[in-house]
Image (tube, rainbow, N blue to C red; front, side, top):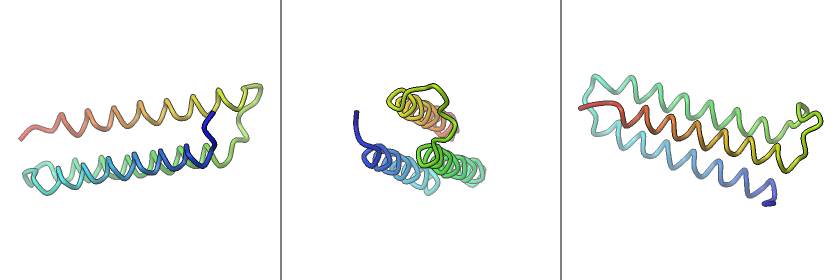
Length: 93
């Protein structure tokens, strides 16, 4: 299992990369879509904070093993980033 520090680094790096893509899209999108892109950026920032909070405060694990918990949190984050990417790509010009 990767250590927690590496999981946090991966989440932050992927979040930053996605937000950079959003800003590129924002720079070249028509003014009608700028508010939608800003909403997606806001959702991405909230997602990153929520996932990091889940990693830092793992009080709700219960009977779940630690390795499975982190795998589940990571997969939820990656799936959410994919959904946000689909939302970003669905904006038509």
